[in-house]
Length: 231
Ligand code: ADE
Image 1: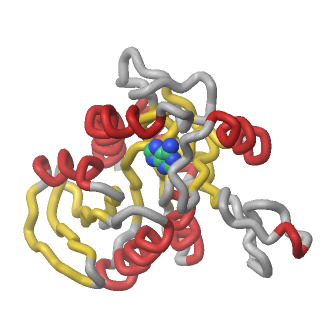
Image 2: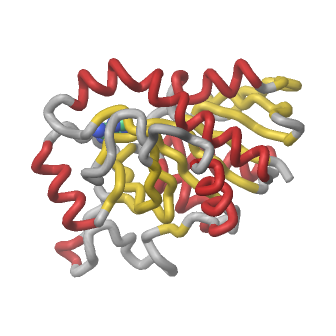
């Protein structure tokens, strides 16, 4: 077993980096990969960079070059589900690209044209169960399971939030999860995405994101650590 832990930004991986035992650092395709141990497990930690292309590239490298067997994505997101507040958590049941739109050709929004299989990529049931178990240990946090929506856009508009909720029934919105999910699925690698809420994707999102990304990242980190422990 070799577990990939991916975050998009420094804030999302730095706690893991401080706590893990780094054995080797490898730079490849402009991404830095930290190979080592965490809680006795073999892990590869990396910062993919922001957006779906960065995340997809990083995921394929993790599979091809590092032979990883499981993927945990850790990071922050904007809330779509009304139950969520800053610091709360979403465990992905699935992930989908909300900005993929070939509807003029008759495809549903989010549907990948001419793609074999579902465009709503299902997370691993086993990892989902571990994540839910891990969440039992968190106090004063709302933790929900649901669909993670990804797109190459920072959402900061309440109307767009309502629209994304209505169209896709999304729990939260971010910029990487669905591309990791797609690459993982196409390579038959189990994954789960853990996102803590940094903002509500509304008019106040930019300020909230700047203020809370670091603090919120800790919640996701705690959950990912607990999943690792159960593997
Ligand atoms: N990541 C954190 N907050 C986000 C938002 N509002 N939109 C997209 N990605 C995010």
